[in-house]
Each structure stands twice: as structure tokens, then as C-alpha cells.
Length: 174
Image 1 (cartoon, rainbow, N blue to C red):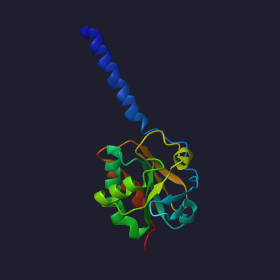
Image 2 (image 1 turned 90 degrees about the horizontal axis):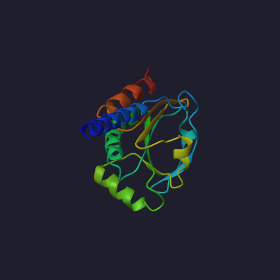
Image 3 (image 1 turned 90 degrees about the vertical axis):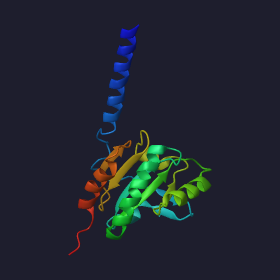
Image 4 (image 1 turned 135 degrees about the vertical axis):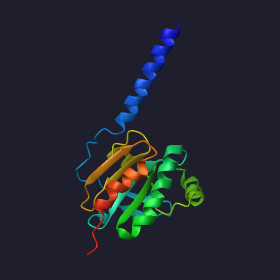
């Protein structure tokens, strides 16, 4: 019986490790033009991703307000937003809480002091375009509109990794 439990535990750990490694698998979107979408933020403002081409480096953070790793990711992105928004970075949370989440999102953004837009993907159209397998799911798009980095899941080094990916993509000041 002990051998069986030990074997099951070992198999479970191997499967968990495989899942964590799968978060780093290459996305089929890497190097390709980012799919366009039009979504409204929690204030009703419409955002068209293609309108930012040649203007901004864009970070899309797909998640839910009830997901603890998603909350941690959003808080980390707030620091990057504060540091680099004036240098050409646009961060969006693409919220997947569903059609009735507007008040919940507003309460959360106020509580967490998040200042970047939360886009409402109530029909999960953007999530399907970006092939979001699980959340949190972060996509970095360069100024030419190409997907340059994709990460699924959360880890303690995520914000540092994202910053290393973002900084070289920002416009260079003369």
C-alpha cells in the first residue's frame, strides 16, 4: 500500500512539473501579427487593439478578479505600467469574469489601486483569438503589432521576466 501511495505521489509530482513546463511552451502566435479585437473597458470606452500599432508596446493580461495568481499578476503589472506608460507601454487587463462583473471589477481595481484599463471580454472572443489555455495568461505585443512573448501561469519572477521582455521593445529616445 505504501509503495502504491509513493508511486501515485511521484506520478502526481511529475504531472505537476509537466504542467508548469507546459506554461513555457511556445505559443503558435509568437512572431505573428497579433489578432485584433474591439472591447470596452469598465467605463464603457471602446478600445481597438489595432489603433495602438506603431504607437505602443502592449501587454495583455487575461485573467479573473477571483483568481489569486491573476491578482498577483495584475499587481505586478501595475508597477510596470507606472514605470513605463510614459515611455510607450500600454497594459490592459482582459477580464474574463463574465457579463455581470462590472461592479466586481470596479471594486477590485479601486481596492488594488490598479490604473490601467480593464477590458471586458464577456463573450471570451479575445481569449479565443489569443488561445488562452488557462489564466493568468500574459501576451506582449511589439509596436509593429507582432506577438513577442507569451506566458501562462504565475511565478515569483514573472514581473522581472516581463520587464526584460518589454524594455527592449520600447521606443528609444534620441
